[in-house]
Length: 305
Image (tube, rainbow, N blue to C red; front, side):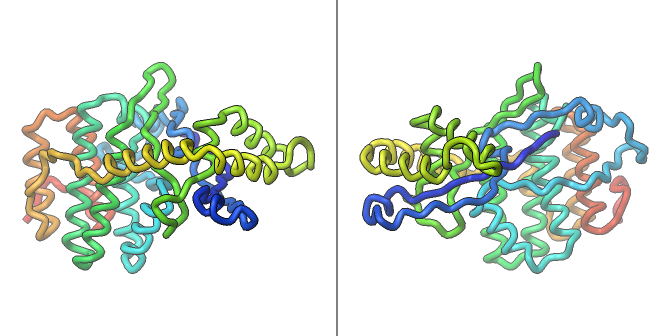
């Protein structure tokens, strides 16, 4: 799977209207996974997802889960609530996101399996919240995980390319106000040609050729300040996207399992998986085994006392 990074630029257009002499461009790095809202799955990744070339016991997946970037707010929340937790707990959360919410390869092709993966991932997140986090941190953790799951539920896959596309998560710096406008997102929407010029200016900036990206940003910010409907429409779309992300997935077929201890938790989930017929049950059981392995090192979950 290829996930590239690129520079992201942010500017509060509303602040620019009030104090045009104090325009300030901020730059940083954001995941291309969110800017393009797509993931290209290579043939090697596809074979890995299908188990090819893997010298591991059957049913046991030991690949290090990827650490995904979604937004400053979501990732900031997860970093805060998991900051005092062990590496095993943090890795288990990364695995929930990587293998249940935004899986690669053939895992993403079957809609029924994807739905079951989301539901099982949210149930595993509930176990972590109930057993490792304070009440306040658990609330914030589950809210963030539900938003990531809602984002993941918008995914569709192009079978000819293996590319997943998702509805974009609104981007803003951590702690920025609700009316904050990411200038590159706005530019990409209303002036895509200018956005391409900006991208090219950044690419060629290291050798001093082409347009100056700072000038492109400032010129666009001035035009945006003179066209308030651009910002109004942008913020309306942001509010709609946030409303969707804040909606908890309505029905979770694993909801209500006993989370008081790992043995009972695993036993109840395994019973549901064995009789459910919800997509790829073997994949779901393998992911559950990996969840148990990450939390307490166990390799098998088929017999519990």
